[in-house]
Length: 444
Image 1 (spheres, rainbow, N blue to C red):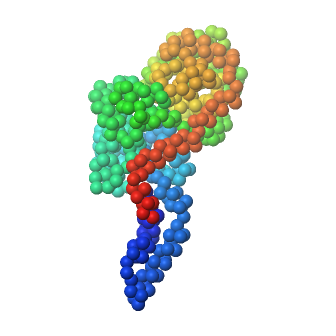
Image 2 (cartoon, helix red, strand yellow):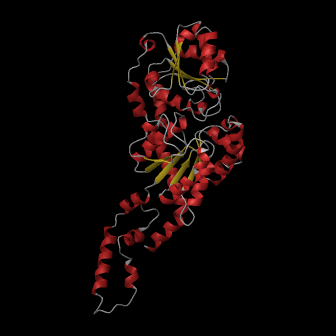
Image 3 (cartoon, one colour):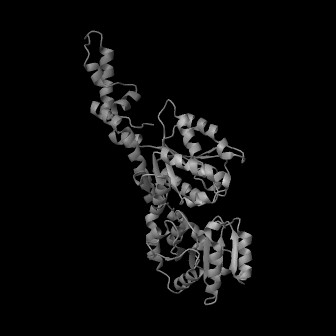
């Protein structure tokens, strides 16, 4: 791979040297035929040199995502989408996993190199340190995206140690949620996660935030200049979403004229599905409807209990995790997000891509940015079941046009977002290697 190489270096890699090196020396006419042949061959190679090909080779990048596993989460979904985008742009992609497991493991593009560190569960993140050093030492990597559940510093330290004596890869830290998620971690993990996050942010070459709200939140809490943070929204693969949405749903609720309200997400405190259940109970008093919540999590029993107490258990379906949520979205009357906080709710963009109307809490952060302060879907206060019910009812009665919603989703296409990532990466590479490249070209 040619990284920051000028035409002279390109020629040297072919086994030839700059003509000026020889023309400046005195050569005897009787014994320099071999040297003249080399000079002529070097001239020919330089004349044949394709700057376009050189530029294409020089700009080629190999990057790596480092994760604990590929669970069914928003971060993992973004990694898969970006992998597709990078591969289609000629970028090499590695996905390094502490353990190759999780619901999304079979969804990795075939051209992605999966590196399984095969670390046992106990202290998995810490025990990944030495294997990561070995990986970075032996693998040519240009850009590293550490996504290590708050322990990104382990990955960054491994990069620094492995780079002793050679050029270090760029480290880009991704902020996918507001910092409130750190406070929800178990006590033993919380302290180290906050400490590690602080140092990771300051050691990273650049920080990507998935919304302006996330950028401001991290900047304020960890004393990071906003100039170091670049806001790039999360991508969706529109063609894949549309293709999968045509799959049949084997459930009678989706084959009737009764409206289906859809919730999607892990069954945990952050998603605040109890408020959605309470809002749905209010909606049913005015409109006969059904509620489906896709996802699995620790609050399943709690939600089932609430549904029973509200007398709506026969109109609520919790199918658990599903591989293809898009077939449900395309047939739902409205998608509702009741979260207490988000970084960037990818599910909203996915629903918009299918023309499904949406209602969301105006929680921090990113949701109001996606919906442009209510232009593409109603926003309600967090935890307000009454306001949520009214917004759902109004959306069921007066849904926004399908084409209007789908047009908005195109802004988040993987093609557009990948371009933003590549522009950022090439800018960082250029800033790092600019002076070297300038000297190469001036000498040529």
